[in-house]
Length: 360
Image (cartoon, rainbow, N blue to C red; front, top):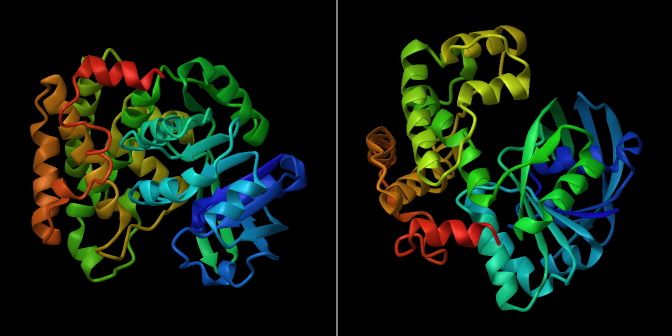
């Protein structure tokens, strides 16, 4: 297949190397750096670059480079959006004028109902597209150079939703064709948005290790997911699960997520973290106060959940406390940073109305 990847970070490059490799289909892959900050890619627009992957997959592959969203959309039958959620609207707005009827877009990972934003905006343009969403990334990776990436994990089990909902089976088949077995159907896009556990894990971890981040220390994050920090994460996760139930959704806990993703054996979150640290060491925690653990996971994860909580009448005191604490220490109001809430009408929509829209 012809695959277009929006993004030039670790996850985007990992997906590009994986999909272009002969053992995974040898697909024709084109990469686009949406913000133009991947200068090593922008310089090769119209040509291509050689990606080097290490770790789980060790290979060198050649991928094409698109200089614009229009070129990327024209080059692909399937588009994969692999940028942080705080970049989703920017990327989607750039792609929308160039999408074609019948194209499929995979969002990895989807948050804050960005899939619904893209799907409804495409419909307004008269475009019939399929938008598939994953609640987390297929691969975990670290970028090790301008065109080098280390692939650490290929998750064993992932759920897929689709808009329109009637194409969920097709979306599962597409993801299976691209990445292999392990994909199953998820009920709807809202379930996918709420199944992303990164915000409930990342924000307490960042806040309670803030001085390490501020001093740019090297710290293995699972080692610092201590008993008390894990207890706060579990509080946030309990509120996330209660919110999902208010919408008639039954999602897996954060403990189950780790078990399915990394084959852990423990049942308590602190013990799971200790087990992962013993197995893997890292990944290292963030060393930049502008980390996506704050700029993405607070407004597009926790703030999104508190907005849904108000809609559904579900109290979320621990989640709101983390939002307020993050805003205080970062010196910015994360409650106002989500640029998807307004166009999605989250503040004025009813719970039943939102559910109806997410089933396409």
